[in-house]
Image 1 (cartoon, rainbow, N blue to C red):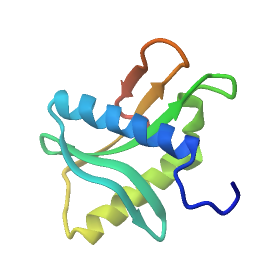
Image 2: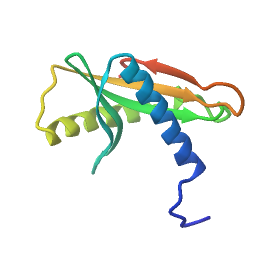
Image 3: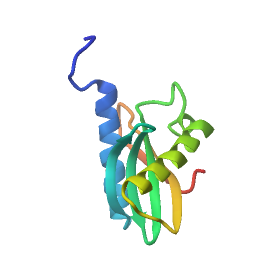
Length: 124
C-alpha cells in the first residue's frame, strides 16, 4: 500500500537485523549507548562503547545477495557520513572520546536456515 504507516517488510527485516546485532555486540561485552539516533545529517543505527572506544555501528541486513552483500552496501560515501554522524553525536551529547571506531554488522537472513551475522571492526 502506498502511503501506509504500517511497517514494511524491508523495515521489519532491518529491525530484525538491528536486534540481532545488539544481542551479539552486547553479548560480546560492548555497552549500548544509543540506537537509531537521528540528526539533520542522518541516522546512526547503533552507538556503543568498548572500553574507552566509541563505536558507531552500521547494521546492514539482507534476505539474499541477489543485489549484493550487506558489505557492498557500505560505500566510501557511507563511511564518510558515519564519521560526520559520530562527530555530531559526540557534540550533541557534549562528550569527547579518545578513539572512535566505525563498525559494520552484516546480517544475512535467508528464507530457510539460520541467519548469518558478521561483525566487521574498523571499516573506515
